Structures are given as structure tokens and as C-alpha cells.
Length: 92
Image (tube, rainbow, N blue to C red):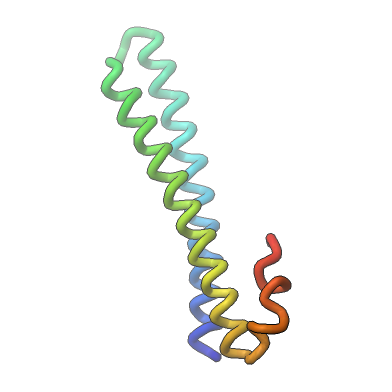
């Protein structure tokens, strides 16, 4: 059960990191768009920034999935997965 708890803590931390990464990539995209509109950079940099945002979004989705799997693993380790899985999957 200890490993399941540690996995859940790690997954929770990963969600926080993924959220911060999403914010950073979105801000970078906005700055890149402003540079493009000012004529300082080219369209390739904008496309690369958009790709970084899409990648950050995917990482965030994967971290939420891993968090839910970790919650269910903890429920299973506690022996309550069959009865209370709905409680474990509620949004935080």
C-alpha cells in the first residue's frame, strides 16, 4: 500500500508541473506571436511554439490519467476499489 501512496503523491506532483509547463508554453506562444507580428521572427517560430503548447497539453492530459490510475491503484491496495472507485475518481 505504501508504494501505491507514493505513486499517487508523485502523480499529484506531476499534475502541478504539467500545469506550470502549460502556462509557460502558452506565454511563450503569445510572445512569439507578438514578435512575429512585429516582424522580428518568422512563422516557423510560431509553429514551433504552437507545437510546444500542444505537447504541454498532452503531457497534462497524461498526468491526469496517471493520477487517476494511481488513485485506483491505491483503492485496490486498500481493498476498496470495487466498492468505492467512484469516490477515488472524483475531481480534485
